[in-house]
Length: 460
Image (tube, rainbow, N blue to C red):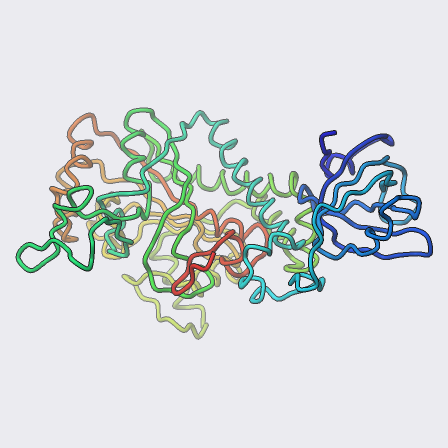
């Protein structure tokens, strides 16, 4: 008989006979002639209690079940006699699929996040991490739902690329060259003899590709992994992360901001309504203010201020920031959190940044010193979204590329899009992993990614 998931059984309105449940043992306690076994199958946070009595022919084996063991149970779903649960299962047969040894590392109910990072292959079996990754799955679905409801097209941008979208040079190289005997030309490695005939890297963004499709299909988005070889060990950075990147034709900066705000609110409402059970765990054990934070995000009108105004607020704050802030400097996390948590007490959108701290593709404003860029800042996280109106004017784009030292011949296809039917267009990138941090109250990005990639760490 096919197994029925626990999440379905716990929602049942009536008792059910002759069902099969399969899962992993969380706890077992024995009475004189029966055992109570809590099992979980990963479909939800809650366990299902199994009652196995001495009439079962393998009852002595059942009494040896350990935490982490896998079982299959055949029996009936009945009304629970205990408190705190509607249903339990009376076993007619119980098969021990595998018995976990005493060395199983998740014997205790509570473990530190630091310890669990050392066993990332097992941590999804804990309540907290099972909840994290169910929420991650649900929010992935919600993102696709959000864009589908607005007639966006989902595109798959390349992971291997020959261009640096951000121009920062923090790229992982992709090569088949034999470094023990590399081909050389003029004393340097000759990448013309590499697999692609030129240098190739893992992408830091799908944006440039998405722009090409926005100028054909109108409104598009990418949602996939991106990579940055930045030697950072902060709680907000990893080397492999996921980005949601919409691009919209015939769209200016303020329409771009409108969509970003609408999206964050939509996702906050979604998780409050659709992930309530898992969310309770984080409200109870991680951040007691989590629900009110999400409700504030869902209900507030995001404050919109110029970068210049933000700098002035920070300079007059009287706060002793670790990093100084003046016009022309990028905001640090401490600045972003002050604006969202202390000053405005809600999400903030900062726009029109100095051109010298932003990439080449952002549209130059008439003042010739700022670009039409925007960041969406949220409490606890800081920057969640970064976006801009893209520079659609060919001459201006070429001038910006010259200023930043980019070789135009490497971006000939990107420049073509400004030669043939160029239009105003905009887009943004939402850090999906930071979104999970926001929605769960989790403070370290390593704890919302199944197998985090960080400097000196690629064990799994």
